[in-house]
Length: 145
Image 1 (cartoon, helix red, strand yellow):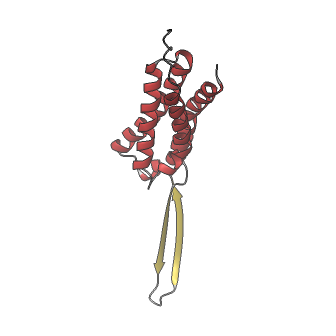
Image 2 (tube, rainbow, N blue to C red):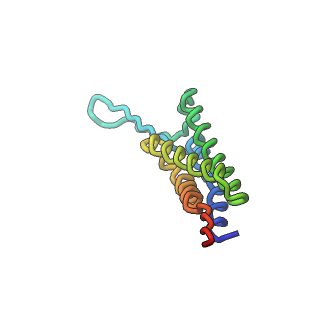
């Protein structure tokens, strides 16, 4: 197995792990922060509160749940495609890896203002696996003259 195939396999298999970590932090970690204050008549603040909470405490809409599942599925398909491509060097693994890395990149770009930055490590490893899969094309045998 070539060095580029090993890097492709490791980065492809690391993609769902990093995506799961980012999605778990988005769901359970302190992603949102609320500030509240009440002011008395004299202009002096009476009470100030700050609270951090995750996406599940905020409320998970069906569209959001579907988006998160699609992101995780794209990361799993990236790992599957990288594994298939390093084992057989055929086009289905290459197509799966490149397409799912592109979808993962698109999903992180669309959600960049909310949770997309949490997906950046998974996107980087997916793009690395996709670029190595795309670069590693089988060479055509040269004709014998």
